[in-house]
Amino acid sequence: MPPLRRTNQRVAEAPSNRTTEVYEQLRQAIVEGSIRPNERLIESDLAERLDVSRTPVRESMLRLAGDGLIVSYRRGWVVREHSAEEIREVFEVRAALEGFAAGLAAQRAPDAALKALEAIHQSYIDSIQGSSRGHLVAHNDAFHEAIIAAARNQLLAEQIHRNGQYYFIHRIAGFLSDEEVHTSIEGHEELVRALTARDPVLSEQVARDRVFDGLEKVLNRIR
Amino acid sequence: MPPLRRTNQRVAEAPSNRTTEVYEQLRQAIVEGSIRPNERLIESDLAERLDVSRTPVRESMLRLAGDGLIVSYRRGWVVREHSAEEIREVFEVRAALEGFAAGLAAQRAPDAALKALEAIHQSYIDSIQGSSRGHLVAHNDAFHEAIIAAARNQLLAEQIHRNGQYYFIHRIAGFLSDEEVHTSIEGHEELVRALTARDPVLSEQVARDRVFDGLEKVLNRIR
DNA sequence: GCATACTGCATTGCATGCAAACATCCATGC
DNA sequence: GCATGGATGTTTGCATGCAATGCAGTATGC
Image (cartoon, rainbow over all chains, first blue to last red; front, side):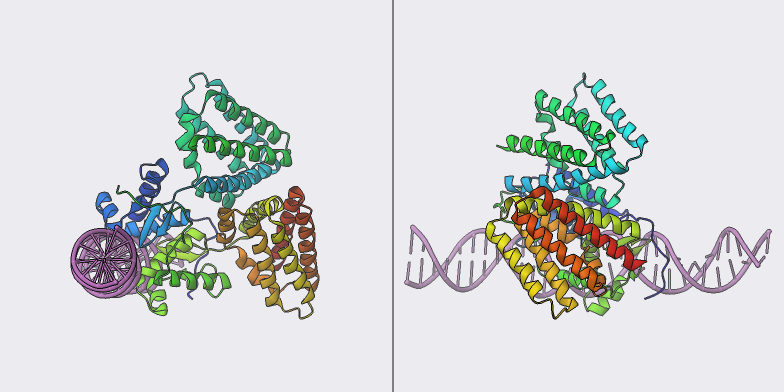
C-alpha cells in the first residue's frame, strides 16, 4: 500500500484507448439498432470487422454487459431484448430518476439555469414550423439535459444517462404523430412552469407523468 | 446475422468463471474497506496474490469501474474515494430509487408479501435483546430486500443493488448508538404501517426520509 | 537552488496461442 | 420415428509475450 496522491476530482471512468473506441462503436450499433436484439456477438467476428484483436472486443463486451445492453447467454453474449414487461421496468426507473431530478432542480437550480431552460423551450416552439423530427429528438435531449444539469447531482446524471434507454426514444421518434408531438410540448411547458414556480413536488409529478406518457407511446408502437 | 433462439428469460449478466471469482473478491475487499480508498490497483500484483494471470484481473477492473467502485487514474486504477459531496449524491440516488420502490410496493405487493415483511420486522424486534450489531445489518438487509422484491421491478432492484453503496452502511453499522438503532427501528415500523395501509405516497415519503436519516448518520461519522 | 531534460523502470495496452467447454450434427439403438 | 450417445468444429477462458507509455529519479544547466 504505497502512499498515493489524492484524486478528489472526478475522473473519467475509462481512459481513451482502442478498447474504448471499440466499446463506443458497439454501443452505438446496438443503440441504433444496426445490431439487433437477440443477435449473437462473436468475439473473433467483431475483432476482424473492427480490425483489432479479440482482447479489446472482450473488454468492451464486459462494459456493455455492465450497461445492461448485452447479456451472457450460453457461452457468449447476445444483445438484450426488451419485452414489454422490461420496457415497463425501464420506464419506471426513468420515472424514479428523472422525476427526482426535476424535484431537485426545482429546489436548487440557479435562476439563470431556469431562464436558460425556458429559452431552450421557447426557441424550440419558435422553430417548430420546420417540424423536422431529427430536430425534435435533439430538442428533447437538450431540454432534459438542462434539467438534469440543474439538479446538481452528477451521480444521478450518470445513472440517468447510463441506462442507455434513450434508444427506445431514438427508434420511435420518427413515428410520433403530430398530436403526440403537441402533447409532448405541452408537457415541457407544464414542467417549465412548475420549475419556475419552484415547486418540487409538482415538478416531480409532472416529470413522472411525462415519462409514463412516453411509456404509453412506446407500448402502442410495439403492438 | 444468423437466426438465433430467443432469450426472453432473464439471464445472469456474467457466467461463473475465474474472472467472476476475482471480481467478487476484489469487490468484497473494496466494500469491506480492506482495500482502501485512493489505493492503487496493480494488475500484476493482484494477479500474483490471487494466483491467476493478469487477464481475469484486468476484466474485473472493468467491471468494478462499471460499478463505480474504482476509477481510472493516470495509467491504472484507484479505489474511488467518496467526498462528503459524493456521499450526498449517493444517498440522493438511493432516496430516489428506494423511495420509488416503496411506492410501487404499496401498490403492487401481494398481501402475503406484506405479511412476510411484517414478520421479518417483528421477529427482529423480538430478538433485539441480544442486540448483536452484525445481526442488525442482516436484518436491515432482509427488510429492504423484502420491499424491493415486493416492488416487482427487477431492473429497479438491480439498480438499487448495483450502486454498491451499501458498503457505507457496513462500515458504520458497528458504530451506531443505541438511540440511532431505536430510530431506525421506528422507521421500519412506520414504513410497514404505510405499506399495509397501501398508501404509495406516504410509503415513498417515509422510505426517502429514512434514507436521508442514514445520510445524516454517515456524515456525522466521517466528521 | 531551482528548473528542465534525460534515462531507466514499472505498468499497462494489445496481440496471440492453447486448451477446455459447449453446441451441432450424425450415427446408432430401441 | 424418436431418443440417446459420440465425434467434430466453433468459440470462449485464460495465460503470456512484447511493445509503448508515462513516471520517477537523477543529472545537468542556469
